[in-house]
Amino acid sequence: MTTVQILLLVCLFLIILYIYLRLRSSVVDAIVFILLALLGAGLVLFPNYTTVVANKIGIGRGVDMIIYFSILFLGFVCLKLYARIRRLEQTLTTIIRESAMLNARDLEDGITEDSGQ
Image (tube, rainbow, N blue to C red; front, top):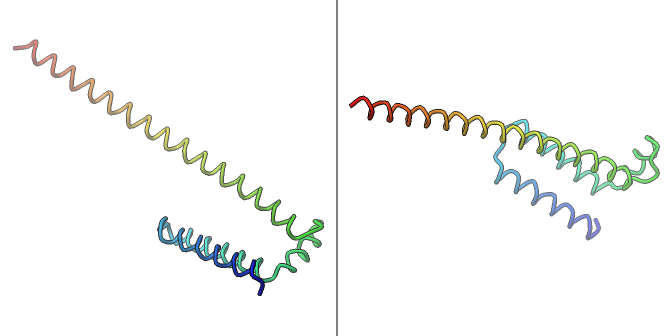
């Protein structure tokens, strides 16, 4: 095992540990992270297999294939995060709108009570 493989495996382990400790997400998320970690460890430990797979799908080098798939994955993550931010903005807008309407009713009730006395 080379030095870079050890370094990459340690980094991969630290990323998975961080995800586990900080995010505490659902079981499905944990399974996906574990599978991705195992895939990453396999790619680090057996780099020649990536070239074999890349050649079978028409890509010259394994590194190029990993970069292509990484770009697609990062694009997917960006779109997913954008969709989540939009949902949060819509939820926040709804909450603020409802709160403003409740405050307006409370003010209106207060004015009506004051004028009735």
